[in-house]
Length: 195
Image (tube, rainbow, N blue to C red; front, side, top):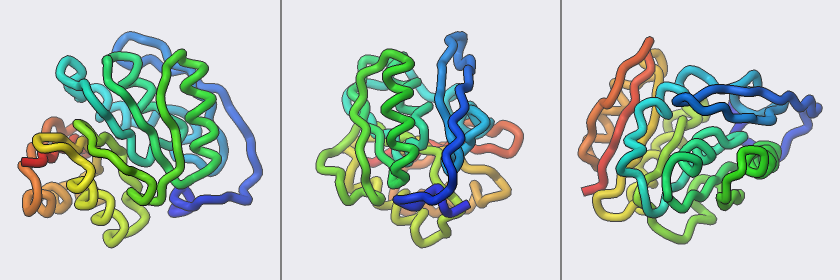
């Protein structure tokens, strides 16, 4: 599964169009082989989106590890925020650009290996992080976010209990003010605030 976190892919392309309803609105997403959740919106990401505080999200938002784009596109569709979307997977980035157009949103999509191409701070960083890359890279993503969040900015993530959600939440408490916003069928939506 770590190939989602690879820059290039030699897996043959097989694009599929999916439609999904999120919070009463229909979205169209083009997906493909070698991107996360190619059959459509996964339950973890849906749980995260269902629990985002859309009424207070504004300013600058980063969709980290955007894949084909559901998080950033959903946030841009429902808020006035400026949305950046990053991933390392070139196929995913191309799909995210196509999907932004399909859903009529204006977002900035660009390649970044973790935070190397990020040069500003955000009010919100939102991610269904790539757990399977291993603890070392995962913690670079989660703790590295602190350097790219404004004061009182928030990191919103979803992690499955079976993939260490409780441990992740406890570890994040070392650097952030942490709250578990929702637990749904083993998925934890975690908000980590940069104080």
